[in-house]
Amino acid sequence: MIKVQNLAKVFGTKRAVDDVSFSVNRGEVLGFLGPNGAGKSTTMRMITGFLPPSAGTVSVGGFDIVEHPIQARRLIGYLPENAPAYTDMTVYGFLNFAAEIRGLRGDARKQAVNRVVEMCFLESVLHQSVETLSKGYRHRTCLAQSIIHDPDVLVMDEPTDGLDPNQKHEVRQLIRRMGEKKAIIFSTHILEEVDAACSRAIIIDRGKIVANGTPQELRQKSEWAGAVTLRVKGVAATAVTTKLYQVPQVKRVTVVDDKDGHVTVQAFPKGGANGALARAIGEAAHEWQIEQLRTEEGRLDEVFRSITMPDTAKEAA
Amino acid sequence: MNAWRNVWTITKRELAAYFTSPLAYVFIVIFLLLCGFFTFFVGGFFERQEASLVRPFFDWHPWFYLFLVPAVGMRLWAEERRVGTIELLLTMPITAWQAIVGKFLASWLFLALALVLTFPVVLTVNYLGNPDNGVILTAYIGSWLMAGAYLAVSCITSALTRSQVVSFIVSLVVCLFLILAGFPPVINVLEQFASPGLVDLVTSFSVMTHFEGFQKGVLDSRDILFFLSVIGFSLFTTSVILRTHRAG
Image 1 (cartoon, each protein chain N blue to C red):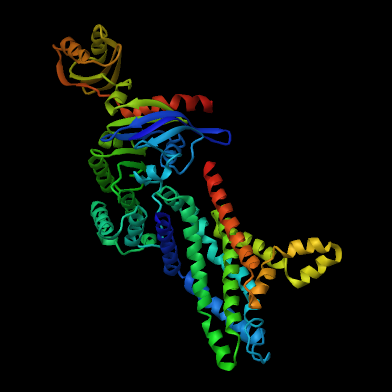
Image 2 (spheres, chains in turn orange, green):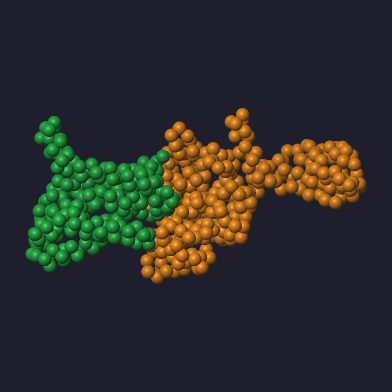
């Protein structure tokens, strides 16, 4: 549904987005990750046709956003950053306006408004002015606006920003539910959201895509992926590490904790994650009293940092 | 057909926005008070002993508009940019032109309403004497066209900035130029050192020069064309500004 090819945006001398290509199909939820200022919002603004690209193309449902902007925009629902809404209108008035400008009239409009009011839990503030709404409600009002025409493509810039944990959970559920039938892109810098809602994630740093894969694949890039945590009782820490270094698959062993006769160590595998390490360690340790033996899945936040941090650190130096 | 539907949707929203904020009521009250005060006290309506609205009433309009029209137009785009709703508006399935025209039309209709509400002045003059109502009508049309020209200038300045205050001041200055270019004292000064051709050129840019005809009851196509082309040119400039602003 969404096809982005070699997209670039230059502001003055700064390349905010640099040669970005990806595509999103129906039924996919793409998480867009990156540090602040990485070019997430700029990319989204180009996809929705708000900013014209400096180079490259965006096509939505087969329509080029520059050549056929109106047809392409009809397919898109957009929740901009900070969820702007007309402050002088009531929630009801605003949603009616959004429906009308999307070409919904009469009964179709009424139904569309009722549907999103229900989906986004806006009944209680329906006749309140947007100006007086709390941030959470304003956010949901803007979200309601973006799905009022039941679009095939949804572009959301930080949809959970500023919401409380319950609201965040609801929005993630909503995204996941809608993602079954639509193509969705949303940006975030909350990594747990990637697990909660995405079928695929892209990490973007200083305008470039630095990683692209399912959350599982991204996690595999972590140093922690496949590492085995072992806790035993009544053995000296040095004895444990010595023994573990004899296991051929072990690259490195660190002692995490050594207290009251309980020793916790972590062993990192040689050459990527696989299930063999835990088995080998289990065998090596069979004569000890094992309290815990666990294979780590890898941590997204660590992957995120290792991908986006080294360069920034270098630049600062 | 569809295009006008979109324009009308925008226009309706903008008009509603005027009336949900105090701006509309404040504007209309001030406009009517000013009209009444200047017509009957400063303009010497009664002392003139003639059944005419031209001098005591319409003569003041270019000056009222100088302050009031930028106040109506200043929020059109500046507010959208400040709140960020411009990002919503311009990613809707409408063209930038439809948005520009829709917004302009809303403000222009609002000004028309304010103008219509001055009808008691017309009733008064009709009660007291037998004015030429044709002249009054053409003067009203001229006044509305002039307001449209000011408003279109305000659209430009509003699109230039996020700040309504900056928009207000800049458009006030530009509109002041549009008045002064045809203001008799200024013309007198100009005539002393500029060639008659140049003076004519400068005065031809003034709203005063073109409003004059309407006040005399003449619907001159050149005058109408002048106001319409100021509006057209200004709205075009607005669209260029909005585009370059987004191009970064």
